[in-house]
Amino acid sequence: MASFILIHGSWHGGWCFDAVKALLEAEGHEVIAPDLPGMGGDEAGLRAVTLAGWAAFAADLCRSASQQPVVLAGHSRGGIVISQAAELAPEAMDALVYLCAMMLPGGMSRAAFKALEEPNPDFEAIIAPVHGGAGTSVDPERGRAVFAQLSPPEQVDAAMQRLVAEPGGPRSTPLQLTAERFGRLPRTYVECRNDRTILLSSQRKMQQLVPGATVVSLDADHSPYLSRPREVAQALIDAANTVTR
Image (tube, helix red, strand yellow):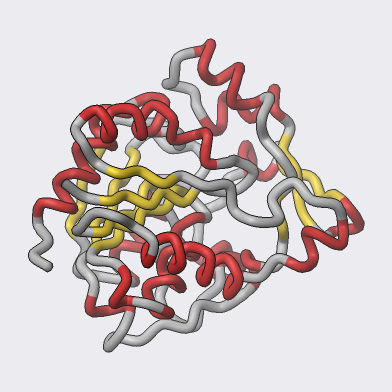
């Protein structure tokens, strides 16, 4: 059995993994899917959030895991969190899984990577600044077609109503990664071929920038935990099965 720590992406919460969590727990695995601290906060709360703080939070969850191996997974923006957590505490985890996530090299921020991506006007159109620029929000109605066009409509309805404000600080913070720490952990990249948020071209550019990951390709949207939960659960289990602690 394994422990899976699942880190959500922008505007979401740990609830987005409920279906995957149920599948993994049914097989006897431990699953921890928290809400990241500061999500949905006021201006002061959003400005207080840092990538380092989120990385420390994720690393502590890995240290508290009750089963081995420990797999740390991140969706979308959650990728920068798990990468920085791996640099901070590689001994606390055994593998990393990126779910259509930001897998960036050291020295690069999420904001800087945007300059390397092809234009995505549909995604940009749903985002608006909030709390004096301390964070962003998304239009839940228009977000449906960008985040989850292949997912069950009733689940998408519920998800869109739970989105909250996203802190801006972590997005602009360059990753600090080394081959000796982050680089020693095995990585899996789960690419989603029908992703309208992080386009497939961006996902594959990241695979080129940070080579060496095992790649799993899904016919999924940006919400694979809704559109392909069984395949996501299997990818996580496969990542755990390749680890020898």
